[in-house]
Image (tube, rainbow over all chains, first blue to last red; front, side, top):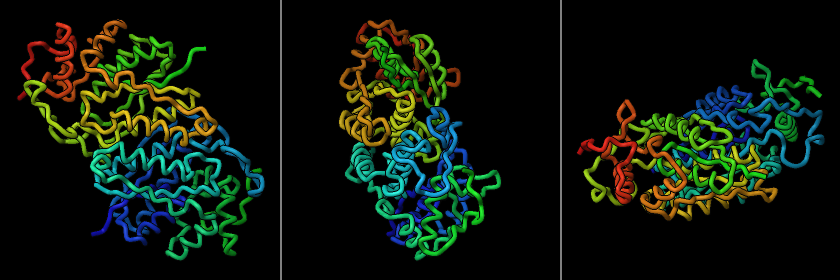
Length: 233
Length: 233
């Protein structure tokens, strides 16, 4: 029997690769996206394209307005920082960190997993490029698995969930290599923190720079970015 | 300096008493309610009345549609069971259990606490009357505190959150005694799983029966229930 898995899907490079990996590992994917008041609602369109291209059993979009609390450049009127290259990316926790976001996303995934009777959740967190985000670290994921085993009816019955993080220790270049191997079309994805209204990536935010560098490592241009785009300094 | 605390407030008897306790302990309460597709949106009105009566620094209502996943009598078209008295209340996990609900609620509380720089969350979970709900147990709360310390910027900086559960070991009668001592007006609250469109409690669901018994222990009628109401068998 095919095992169901809930896959968190933002429509970005990492979650798209994660979905391809879940499928490749033989799971039946149930994709879960969030409309959470992020500036880049364009993500949802990307998530729909990606889900259709890779193939999922179901795709649901949860509406959760995190603007209610603010506290992040992605949901608030805080400016998204721009850099000319990734050497300029700051240390510490970036302003694009959304308070408790992955805790909230995983809590929703857990709810759906319980209803589906699925024991697997996939999430494309990455501890290397996102070392500044506390909720991208392995110890956070392990703590969530321990919580999940106590939080739900299925957990109490001994069927806890495993949170799969296939990208957690990979570099962006390694993630891209894995995705290309699995036939992922990265032109469908979007990772930009601050896209233009027509959906083009800005080319200058931390996320765009990390992607560009990842593709460059393979001698490729990022298919989702205007190659000649001048980043806003 | 007054300490801020996020208080989960459903407008029911338990969360209302919890809010009164948080205030009494000297916290500045930030009340958080959820419109989560529950049948009884009447709860939100009760939460507003209670927040105004007890006094809070702020009250926010998060919209999260848990009907997206279903799986509970409170969000789905599953019938809410009715009983003539509490001896009929079933064993095990009731159909009114909402998958991962408290995990989701606490995740939102954590997000707001981080934005407020609050280190305290109050939640009116009760392990005695709600022994069937996995996410009402002390071990679940402890696991959430451990997760929170790893999940957030403030947690990483050593300012984790404490999740206060002042009701966790109390009987309904003890909860009511504490609330009355603190001047809570229980006529403002609603706990019914299946109220009539005009907001009257049904008198026959598990929640109504537990409340009624709690008031009866003090020789009182539940001020939020029609005393003479015949429960639907």
